[in-house]
Image (cartoon, rainbow, N blue to C red; front, side, top):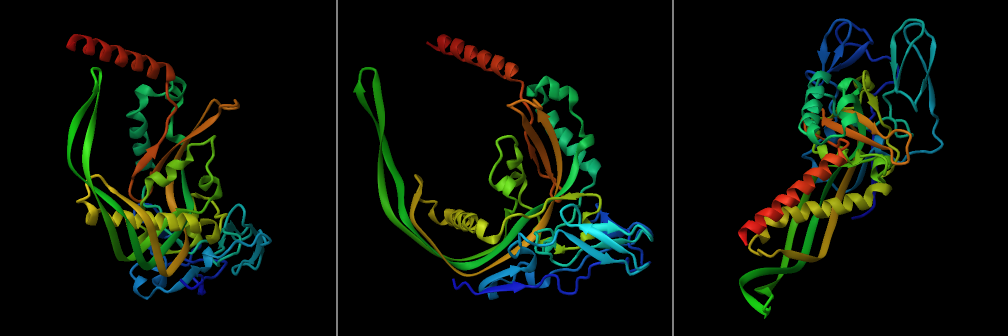
Length: 386
C-alpha cells in the first residue's frame, strides 16, 4: 500500500469558545445519558451533535492510501498546554489548562468556554461516542457482578465494597478502517481414524490416522472500526493494576459516534491519547490478520484437526485512522494499599452495551480450603470406583 498520507480535517467548522443551545442560547450544556444526546441544562432542550459523514463506516469501497483524522495526527511534544480564550459575552480572557480539561467557565459572566478544534497534544479526538447509561444503572451492573463473586472475595473487600466511587470515563481509542486483499496458505489435517497401541502392561497410547492437505485461501478484506487503545499506560501493561479489563468490554457500537464536542465531557473524566499511529501499527496489523483468520474459519471447517497458516499476507489498498473517545463506567478498589504487593482492581461497564467485566480480590484461604475438599472428594470417589 503506498504511504500517501492524507490528513482529514475533522475539526472543520468547529469553534473554540461558546457552544450555545440552539433553542435558548445558553452555554451550560451536558450529556443526556438517557438518549446519548446533548442537553441544555437551562431549558432542557436535547439535540444531537454533528455527524462525521466522511469518517463513517460504509465508505471503504473508495478507501485508498493512508487517511488520518486530524485528531489522530502525531502528538507534538512541544505543543502548548494552556490556551487563552476570549469570552464573546463579556470580553474576559479565560485560560484553559489542556492537561486537565477542555472546558472552563468564565469567572465574570459564568458562560462555558470550550476547546473543540484539534490541538496537537492528543487532548481533542476526531469523534466521541456519548454515554448512554445512567450512573444508577451502571451501579446495578457492578453490584450484580461483585455479588456473584462475593463468596470467594476477600473479607476486607466484601465489607468495604461500595459503588459510591464509580466514575464515568472517556477512554482514548484509535478506530481503524482497512481495505485490502488477503492471501493465506498452510497445512490442514483431517482425522481418518484412531487405534490404541499397548506399550507395556501398564502403558498404552492412542495413535491417530491423519491426512494432511495443502490449504490456500484468498479473499478481499473490508474492516470497519477496529478499536485499539491509544493509552501507553494500558497498552504497555501494569503489574500493579488489572486495567486490561477495558478491552474485555469491547465492542462498542461505534457506528453511532458523532463529531467531537467537549460538552459531552461535562460530568465525566477523560484520559488523553499519548501514543501515535506508528506506535500502534504493529498491533493493528496483527489484529487485522486475526480478523481475517476468524473470517476464514467457516471455509476450512472440514479440517477437523485444524489449519496451520504458514504464510499470511495482506496487501492493503487503504487504511483510515481516527481518534475517538469511548465511554466506560469504572469502579476501582486498592488491595493492600501502601504495601509492595499493592494491586488495584477494576470493574468496568460498557456505557453503551452494558457489558460488564472486572476483577475482585480473592479470599485465598477459602479458595485453598475448597481446593483441598474437592481434591479429597475426588480421591474418595476414585477409591469407591476401584
